Image (cartoon, rainbow, N blue to C red; front, side, top):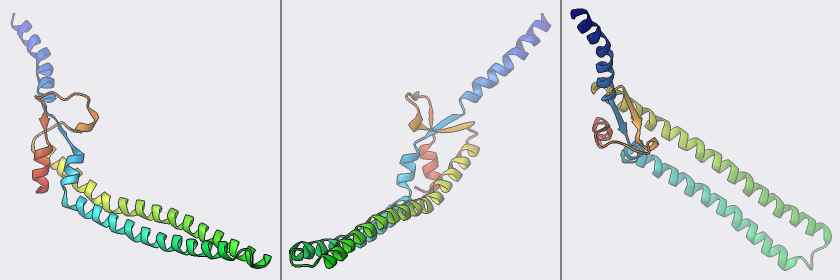
Length: 166
């Protein structure tokens, strides 16, 4: 009888341990936390300013193109053929510069976003790691990937926000 009890206890111990460990899973709404971070607001402002600067420069190119195109259309009938070709080439050059600038601006915006977002992501990850260790969670998962979350599940979002001082 004692052997059966010991055997039963040995079999049930891992099951009980596993049952306790499953309670140590939490979730976080990363998007909610990130958008609440002051660094994110600063990033958005910097991105907007950079975008506005690029847009203003692009507008200069478009204004130059529009002016030259208007002049060309008004004067094309009185121009000799070599001047016409030179003006057409100027218009194509401006178009090419505008296209190149758009590509350059897009690339620079992506680089800026990465440079500004990396420290935000790292800070969030450190907070998630700290909250996970402090609360003995086995996992903290992003809530955006689940189709269903039990009302009994642990939401670590407030804990992480508190850790970040939000």
